[in-house]
Image (cartoon, rainbow, N blue to C red; front, side, top):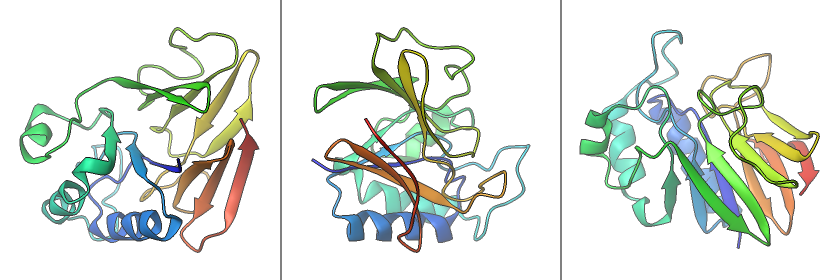
Length: 180
């Protein structure tokens, strides 16, 4: 099964469309959203085509393919308009014998690890900085930000297929990858 991971849409209709086009092009079967879907947050500038009301129906149309976790910008009102669960703090995925702890990153991250076993994978967004690194005892992944990347990175998402996690830009280029 092919998974796509994306984080930090922040209400950008432009980048939500690009993300969903990439999902279709990649042929992924599940879209794992790592939070901060609709609201831009007080620390971020408005992303391109900030239009949360346009993002809502785009994501709702994909509701049967989405796994999502709550970001620090999600609120209960977001759950009222989204037709898939968005208020869980984390999601545990078992993929190809590997355990992935998926979360937004504002609570659990490399400085505050969740309960992980040797060889587990922590994947989160929040920082808007892509990562794919082997750490001591676990793998740390961050697909970057779909709409407001930081540290000079392009807007990115990631795919996981056949044990390889690849962070991609919207031109289809691999920015970084790691074998899990």
